[in-house]
Length: 121
Image 1 (cartoon, one colour):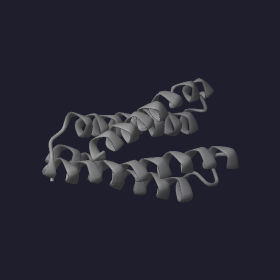
Image 2 (tube, rainbow, N blue to C red):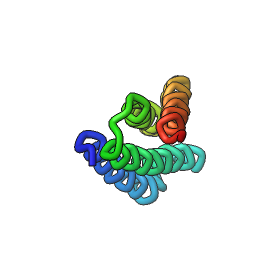
Image 3 (cartoon, rainbow, N blue to C red):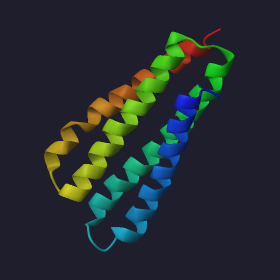
C-alpha cells in the first residue's frame, strides 16, 4: 500500500470518527440543530473520502499512475478544505467560511473523475 496516502487515509478516518463523536456529544447542547447538521455533513464527507483515499493507496500498489496520484491529492485537499471549512464555520459562527466549502467539493469531484480515469480499461 502506498504509505503516504494510506497514512493520510487512516489519520483522516480517525479524525472523522473523533469529529463525529464530538459533534454528537460535545456540541449538541452548545450549537443550534442546523449547525449540528453542518458538522455531521463535514464528518460524513471526511469519513467517505478517507475510504476513497485508502482505495487510492491500495490501487497505487498495482499501478502508480498520474491519475491515481491526482485522485489522492484531490481527496486529501478536498477533505481539508470541505470538512475543515465546515468545522470552522460551526465552531466560529463565521458564515463567510461557507464560501470556501465549494472549493473542497470541487476537489472531491476532481478526485472521483481522476479515479475513474485511473480505473478505465
